[in-house]
Image: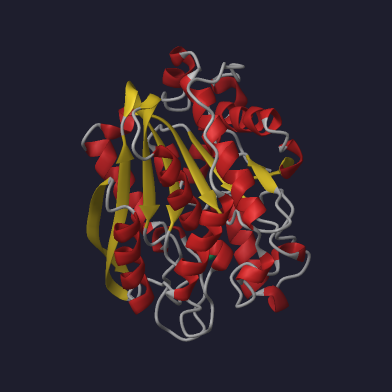
Length: 357
Ligand SMILES: [Zn+2]
């Protein structure tokens, strides 16, 4: 559901008009029907956690390199779709991944602001087992704030840097287990229109890149091979508090919690629960891919730094990138050690929809 993030954006952008709206704390306030589908799919009965034994060597990111990537990305300037910074970021990602197998998924998004060219990048690292684990991040920065100094250090920057740091650990080896694909999604942010002051967030006017790629992968059969999609978003906050997302697949959230506990990072995860309806995992959930959104939507008191020019690197830490990156890498090992029949169960469409509160 759109709802939680939607509520959050309402609070940030329309704060003066909204009362009693708590952006950083969890209950869902609205839920379009399509988001209920994703939520229902994630319902606990779909399949329990497996207590899988990890497969393959333990991989850990290099936090100083992740931090360096973040600084380099931010130095490119604002990276909203159509901006010079976004163009530079594409070239930057290609340069960092030049020795990897990278594919582009280009398209023209029809937005309320007119047609905008977009491109998702997918870096593929082969594994020994048939199946794919996708790690995702959005690469664009907020469009309505394009005429401000907004750089999206946490929102767009942190998770993109993290994927590059993860690529460093996947490169040059045959992975034990499923292939890992890194998906750099374009067009996550809402592009409402060019009308000054139009800050609406609406479902069809955002998630352009992930919707496009989900549709493509559904049509070419790739989606059936995806065992899990782990999305990272806003994971650089110094005060890291990744929420348990009720619109994600429950078994996958359980596995992330298990991975965090194995590394001693459990206090950074799932202290609170929420529903992230408006993020890049949703288009994949809708086509039956097991998904998990790793997001800290408590960025500053009451999520106050989200979608403001205060989203700057001084609020972030290399340690938070490390925690998230290592938990993702550990989760991959657990997914690889999991019995496959539960994963296939999670591909089934939901039989029952659950209403949000
Ligand atoms: Zn954003």
